[in-house]
Image 1: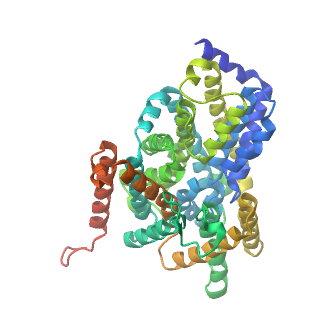
Image 2 (image 1 turned 90 degrees about the horizontal axis):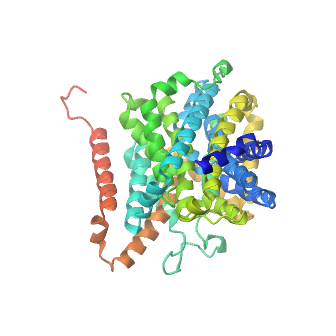
Length: 497
């Protein structure tokens, strides 16, 4: 209790409160700009925290992390351009709502869902961090491989009307994940003599190209060859959190928060997997699953609740085990180390008051994230009033600048343009771009853990089916495929359909 009481002292420290608010605002801006991720926001703040007291420095970094995760939904909803990889799923229902003139309502729904998911995830972090971390420790090569396969099937199922096309697009992403050096032997594959591809296809130019630049290409194509249907007038009076809708969807919020926290606690899984698993679960719980992907409230609630709960989950292995849950938390752990804090099992015993200060700071970051976005909703929607003749070139320029700023490599700019052309073609022929991104992310996880597992198991592939968690994930994958193809199969003649 003394540690808890001591941690509450940051509530009356105006410097710490302002630091958390500043970090959250910076994170929101970085997350909303394609190419500038949570990792970059934290990395930019770390030099500023030198010499700061731990509560202030850590509070700023946590604010940036929380804000960036939530900020990625803004361009995803307004422009069909996810600001961060974890916001890809938010485009499925967020952008169709904007097309209907409900951008303000979609943003309000996303902000409220992010806030509730973040706060519930933070409570789970406080109450169950050690046991969740223990569960995450049980994930080895077999479990990671099975989780990656399940994630690929889920994204193929939810991102397109054609399961087969979704699987093909996912396999394309898996193929792209094999470019570069072999994870075990180091042999170069499919690099075509380009040194920049030795480390593989960078996720950032792929994400920017498949979503931002392909959207620009699509707009130009519609303007030249088709009659482009203009966006409907946005109802700004609805630009507020629809709490009633969120309350009615409490089951979706609860399941998405739990999935986001658990997947976030598994090192390397990431927000993309969490958001799509939550989206698929929400669709299965819904009485109207056919509405998902058309601008449905529950779809957006599921992805945004899961995203911010994932941020809480990612802190669990970092704080309790000293193992970062994702890239952003790896940078965050570096910031904690600079502050003289060594994450790991002994942290709770040696620095109890500081741990609870981190928990309180994370709760405050979620509150500041909600307040800043709440007052900014109407400002965000104004971007849709910019003429597309100015908006689309601006998106293209900012996207390429974001890629170059993040990687410092001109080749990645050309790579983003190539992915933009690929994304345009995939959308034209109905394959979708989200499966490619998930295939690119999960392909590397699946391959490296398959190879590692075969080495550990002495080339005995049956061991992947004897590990309890791995077997459960593979069984879920098979069942999901069975029900999907059974549901999509054509009805026999005379069935009345």
